[in-house]
Image (cartoon, rainbow, N blue to C red; front, side):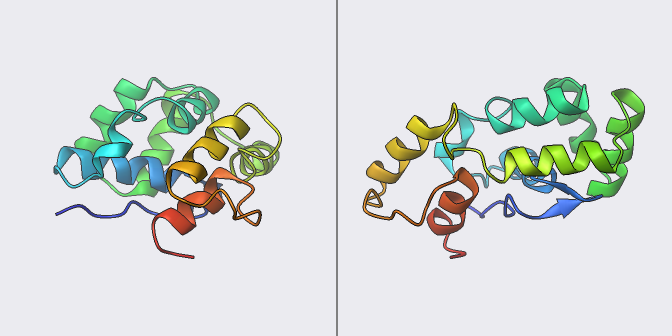
Length: 138
């Protein structure tokens, strides 16, 4: 059985997307992650997030699978990579919640929308908006 990952809008320590990334790691390890998500593990938004935090995705994956809450893992990221202040969080959230809107991910978003029969949905302008529709939350 496959389980949906958390919303890209969900936050840990004020940081959007982070819980989704951790959830995908856990679900994949349990064999419950949607197969179409497998190719993006550690790349795309996951890669941008780990680079922003300055931790290696492989190290993060090892830490997540060792257990702990999302908050504990974010604290680990701060200790291993860099701590984030409110300005960092604001910049990250502004970036990740708008990815796909007139940027490097726009073409990918349009391709995904077309593949899912959603090309007519002009209200879906970002990847997180697409995820919400694709995963049945909106």
